[in-house]
Image (cartoon, rainbow, N blue to C red; front, side):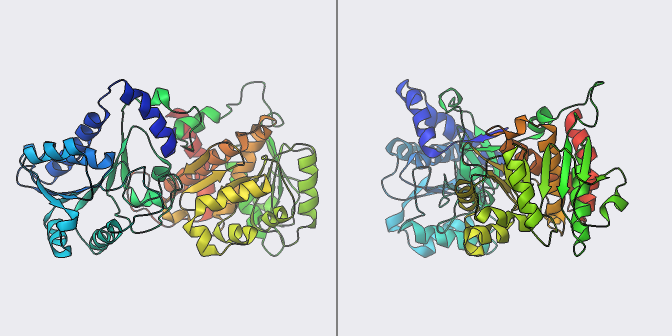
Length: 493
């Protein structure tokens, strides 16, 4: 499980270590230097390589200066651009190591551009966890210039110190120009910007330097990303005394005569998770034909999946209200998400909106949702009381209380019609299997994150991208069919 902590919690965790005289900056800068040296070695050799170090006034700048000294002593030609009043001891260490020091106020745009264009490696230590609201002048213009060079095809490798300069550390926003990194050396622990979109896309590959913060961090992180072992730990392995009723019964109110395929896909997703039984009360004529093991008609269930492919919501509204009254978890997908526009729900109701559906529910412009997906998911959870599994390239799970979950790993091939129907069905199975505990605070969010993890990794398995290849096109049914083997893989890993 990956855990990320907000900047204030990180600063509090550092305080007792700094008071005890722990050399946090020395450890951080040495790890940063090792990352830089490792990259230069992959490209040939360290000696003679040109390195540009961008130094801000905070601790990130101090880390960068001490790292610059380490790299210069290995024979690299290092230039450091100094923005403002930088760490004095770090500056002196860099000077003694032969680093060329160039104050930002004395550097022209051409000189910066030349230094950047000649360097094979940039180390970005301009802004850290103390920065809020995006870069300000004069840094904003310099960051924009470097960002333009990087986006325009610069071959320089960028290593960010803790976080890329310009990202919203806690809210994961991109409020201004940002230098996109190829890798980020996170100091002490992960921050929300490393796991949440859109800032995570600016971080590249993230590695964490252990600074001994763990014992001083809060019990509850701000952001969590489940891994395979976490999902395996949630899985209930049936024993000799289990039967179809103890393993979870899922009710599906999905599909219609107009959209029969949505019912089939939600059923395929639910079956892929291994339920004890599925009861189908929708109006798709294809569901029982496709899956004869599904039982048509009403009966007792442990979780409902409502909405995929429905064309009228009267029966959906009454089913939702009855389920909430009896404490039965519910997944609301597609059109049924609109039912939460005028009613409050418990956390055991999980909605699964894409950006357009989330925008419609909140009354936001879709562009605003896509630019601030975390804020949108949190706002939807706060205003409705429900758990939100927002479907983006990185799925976001938010509830009115507890951490936000961020589940990446799905290939772009997963963006295909019906993929969300499969996810809704799978989540229904997980909720049913864990009933009645699935209605407890925090559990719906964790199960939603587990469903997103499995769905993404099943898509990767189906598309052939698990080994890092480009993969190939897939359909939603391909994802559903890959679920059992994906589950088996994590259980045996």
